[in-house]
Image 1 (cartoon, rainbow, N blue to C red):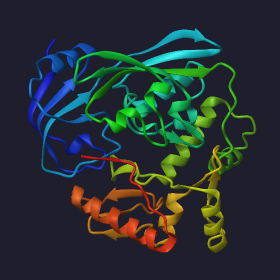
Image 2 (image 1 turned 60 degrees about the vertical axis):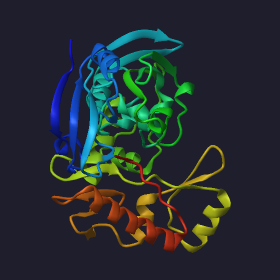
Image 3 (image 1 turned 120 degrees about the horizontal axis):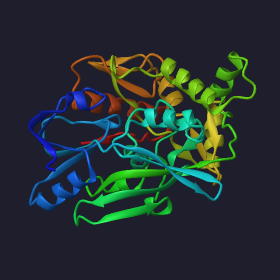
Image 4 (image 1 turned 180 degrees about the horizontal axis):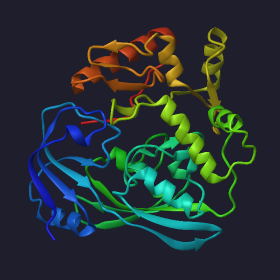
Length: 338
């Protein structure tokens, strides 16, 4: 079956920031065979972007060449392995819907990643994480198609070369097309509620021993309060990575900024809260043209209407310069720029 293809496609509605751009060809891949067929017939066709939910993306504008929109569906339980339930989803499945599907069937483990926008296939590309958990910690394996050779390959977690908000797939953005992802969900479950926001949310509801669904609902409630709904206010979620510094640098920063949130890392480094750094530079709620920092979370840049990629880059640069000048910290953007 030939993949559905659109000529001169408008991409504004396909990225959560709502930024304008067009694709000369938009190819919707609904099956693995669609992807294989595209590789076999692409010829010299230039691939500009592999698109999932468009939630971690800044489009610079203008016309892209070919954009592949991954819409491969499917969810299933594969079995039990070494005390864990193994489940699989197609790369085009909506991430939060998949998380809720696992939880309603009694398979805990992904609840801290509730309500993160995007697709299942994009989750390992970005190595999404929140509230003390990264997808790398739950990934069993994934299937990906090499768009250069047409070869299908299975990656285990180590082969994905995961790092903080990073993976081999993010570093080679137009080579690997993720088609299916498998997760290892522990059958012996312990809640991850040590992050202050989750603990406070559960305490406010008088929940001392939460179920996985209750943790998921607490995370979703926090995210709804702090983050904009892309349907009403365009954004790409958290725009900057939380910077990681060595212990000595953290100690020096704390001497001048005792309230700086910091989180010890297994290797002895400290992760700093980028949102706090930005807020101290008075960017929370401020605008620069049609783009600004969200009123509830300075880490989130939002489109107030008719913004372009250039507008986003201008604001991001101003924020980076101010944080650099005040704290000597270089903020690294989290979204992909195309």
